[in-house]
Length: 251
Image (cartoon, rainbow, N blue to C red; front, side):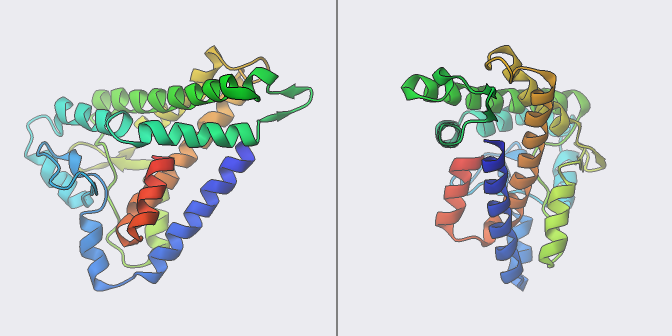
């Protein structure tokens, strides 16, 4: 499963980066300034079908208009929107469960037992695992961001160069912004990845509910955060069908 997931991530990364290289034009700067999460502000999203993000300068200005940065209410709304109130809450775990059924993790003698590999019950267990990891990740990220005053969302790069934008997206996985717009370690991403990785230790089958496997799951989750940032960076330049498909399977 890990190899299959990693391969899928690399395919997505390659597609998004290639679109970024092809679409370097004056309009792309304007598009990036409004690229991925309009729900960062307290105002309602005027176009919920295509949530768009703000540049780091806009993030700082928006935070400055709030006496408490983005405010706990705005962060909680963004948490609900990212975690539950979108179609990918159903579709992304289903996609992941299907991948795991097609390629169960582990090898004999340490492999998924039959009740995690065969039949509708196994699919349901894998689906539940995917939902648990998603909710654990987003909840830990929200709580950490609220406690440490870390801004939610993603601030796109202002560079027209595709490779610079790609590096910025991956770098934002490790260093993001505070509520007031200053750079800070992305503690919320680390906390979320750890929560997603260790959540499975409470219910996964023997041989997979240990620290080593939890660390692998946490590392993979952090890589998926980077892939998500890359998607948000280049999403405005992708064809709409591709953008919607990636959002449904990977959000």
